[in-house]
Length: 330
Figure 1 (cartoon, one colour):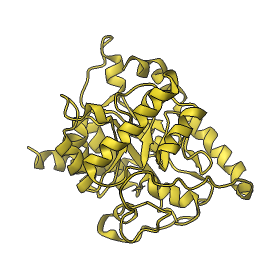
Figure 2: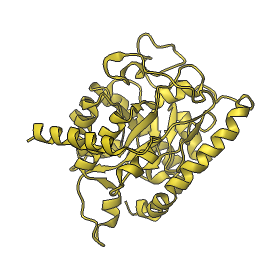
Figure 3: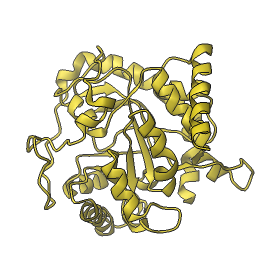
Figure 4: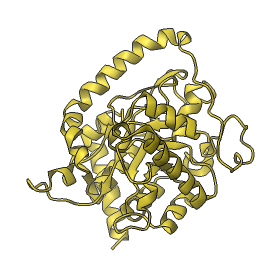
C-alpha cells in the first residue's frame, strides 16, 4: 500500500481548495448543460438479469433503500442533469491508530470508531441523505431528483471493520454505503469473509469491485488490467448472485484506456481519488471523491460533506447521541 502514501498528503492539503473550485465550476457549467452529451448505456455482460421492476436499461436496484422507512426524500433545487455537485467521501479503515512517525500512512488511512460515529451523527443532525452511485447516475441522466444534502459514502478494499465497526453505525441512521471489495482478499485476515460480504449486501449496503489483487491498473499491461477487472467482477457476481455495477481504481490509478476496460467489462460507473464534488455524466467512469482519514475536525468533515458548520447546539447533540450509542454497546 505504499502508493497510497505517494499522493495522500497532497490530497489532504488540497481538499478544500478542490471543493471550492468544483463549486465555481458547477456555477459555470450548469448554464450550458445542454451542450454535454450523455454517455452510452453500458450493456450488462454478465449472466444475471436486471432486478425485477427495474427497466432493462436502468440496472439501478438500490433506489428504494436510501431513505429510512422508504419515505420519499425531500428534494432541493440543486441542478440535476449532466453535471451536479455531490460529495463522494471515501474511507479505508475504521480503527484507532496512533499518529507516530512509523504509522503516519496507517493513521491517514484510518478513522477511529468514535470519530466515525460522530461523523455519521453529524450527517444525521444536519439533514444529509446518503445516496448510492446508482441514484447519482439517475440524477445525472435527469431521471430522478436528488434529496436534500446528498452525499455518497464509500469504503475501499473490503476491510473487516466495514462490517464490524462501520455498518452498525450506518444502519442506526438508515444510511447506505458502498464497499469496494478486492475479490482476491476476501477471507484473508483483516478483510471481510465471504459471509460478511454477502451479509452486507443483504443488509442493503452496495458491494463494488476493486480488482482481484489491488493493483495499479495504469501501471500494468492492458491485458493484465483487463484480467484484474473482469475477474473481480466475475468473482463478486458469483458470490452475490446479482450484477455488480460500481468500480473503484486501486491507488486511484487510471487512464482513458483503463476507463474503457472498466466500461467494456459492464460496469455502470467508476470512482477515482481525484478530489472535487462536481460529478458529470460524461465523467461517470472518473467520479471525483474526497478522502476521509486521520483525525479531521467535525467542521472539516462538514465542509467535505457539503454541509453547514455544526453549531454549538448541534455539537452537543452529536456528543449526546454517540455517548448513548457507546453505552448501549457496553
